[in-house]
Image (cartoon, rainbow, N blue to C red; front, side, top):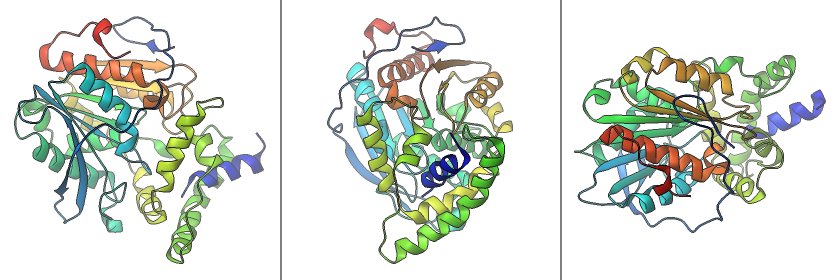
Amino acid sequence: MNKTKALGLTAAVVGGAVLVRRATAAAALPVPAPLPPPVSRDRTVRTEDGVELSVHEHGEKDSASATVVLAHGYVQSSRLWNGQVRDLVDARPDLRVVTYDHRGHGRSGRTERHRATIQQLGRDLARVVEAVAPTGPVVVGGHSMGGMTVMALAEEHPELFAERIVGAAFVGTSAGELADVTYGLPAPVAKAVKALMPRLNEAAVKAEAKGKARKVGAGDAWMTFPRGADKALVREVLDVHRDCSAETVAAFLPTFSDHDRRTALAALAHVPTVVVVGDRDVLCPLPHSRALADALPTSELTVFPGVGHMVHLERRAEVSRILLSLVDRATTGAPRSLATAPG
């Protein structure tokens, strides 16, 4: 890829598994056919500063054996967890599975810029957990920025991981050093792109104020999927990206540069965890997941060859199995046979 094309693609984005630890390799399964959205009980949770978060509960309502709370990534929405929601509820009707939209994303309320931080998202997640699971064990999981949100929760409320939260899943995410990520580009090109991104974002905000939609297209696809990815999945992600405002894109971008929550992982040292990543992920590359798994003594790291940032979409069934196994391990101490997991 030449520098001009690389710069254009990256600027546009603005606005078979290998189980590494304590398990065996597994063959990749076909991408399941798209399904209608799972039936949900929708509600709102009010944050400390008054933002209304859109929350979606699925599965058991009153007597759940455990609650699974899943947080989505930057510029995305809870919609992209729909596959896992269906798989978990189908396999374990006794579970309550909860997804929600971060502030400024999806159907949640907008945020003031100074509140558009990963630290604030951790506080928001604490509110969600308190609201949807006042009792019983909780397993939390996050993709990309959602995984960073789980780390921020551990940083803000380490006591929760001793009292309420019994397991955690980190999917395509990072504990820090994101400033060094090159998006798979030559280092000089990546440096130029990163310098340009804030200006492009602010230009998009001004254009949006005049009624012009934020441009979403090939660059977004290139950054989130490898070449040859399922086109239906690419379209789904781009549709979600289009729903995210330029203001939200601009507001949250700076928070990644100072994201460093490696010390917060100590709160998770005794909690069963899983780390999942595609080896073609250019946003939160494989070495970041390896470092994360190394810092978590109870973790299992699963690497999916040929898969990009949207690993929970490209390998939906396998990621659902991993989450189901984590729930079982965290709540009973014994993994469920994969033969009974969604396939």
